[in-house]
Image (cartoon, rainbow, N blue to C red; front, side, top):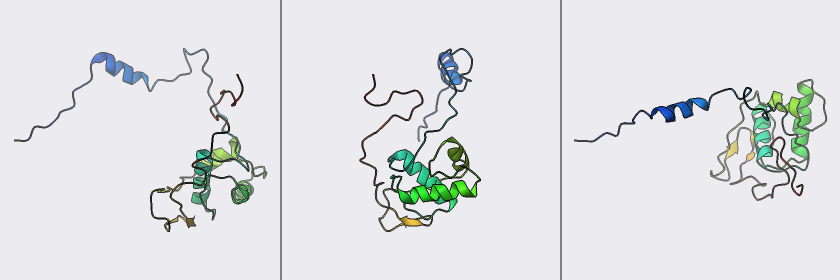
Length: 150
């Protein structure tokens, strides 16, 4: 006979604690401020947020490699996206550009896949983004201090 594990109902204090995770934070937290701005990305930036940006651009139709480096190709793709969407064409990914880009489902990249695999019209995918070992430059969390500041 096979014994089945049955998940038990959590105790009352645990249920109450879990239910609080979905509550609106606007009330009761004096220091809480809702963040509506997105981090600004521009030429020279590197890292995971650039990978995320490039995944959205490739899903939109940009023919580019997902590298994690905001170089000339990414800037040109952003400029074209901004032009097509009637935004200010400056090649900088600010809040308005992010708001439009985030409506697009990004392509998925299997970084552990074979090197020769193609990604949704992009060049072949490396085993990791080129920016994988890039040291952090700044903290993009709203209100966080910049490196080197007390």
